[in-house]
Length: 172
Image 1 (tube, rainbow, N blue to C red):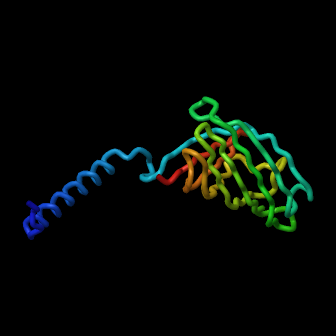
Image 2: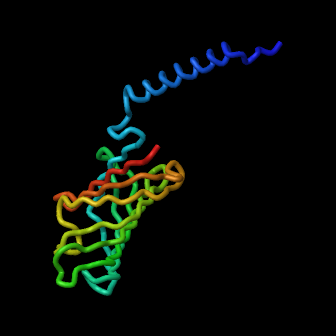
Image 3: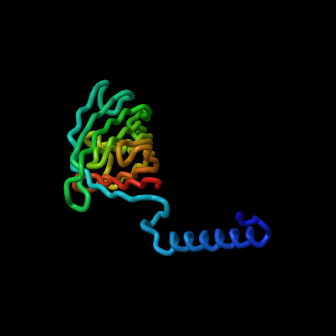
């Protein structure tokens, strides 16, 4: 025999759904996994990169740098970073800010994370690298395997020893 969907049954179902929603919401907010709710945080340290610069020359629009470096997570090797930067906007007198299009591919044990965007660098640069502690944030636009359809952002900071710290915030 079918149970009729009378007002008492509807009220009971609605109450059960409301209580379960409150329970799930309170469990989710009671102990967030990361400081930014809804994101997975991956902190990586990049070795000083091997860089290959392609003409038309340092500090000129179109100059492309290709680089790669090892990555570590919690002090242990954790893949490689492959990247390119292309200068596309500079100030004519060599002072001010230089804008570069950056593409970073984090080749990690469980797949790749791909990030792209523009970053501004204060001039003058020394040996074509940003000043210490300069920060740049670009979008995570995709990935493979574990990181398929990844979205979020990566913030990069150049450290005093020539290495870089990357903080990947992956939207869950």
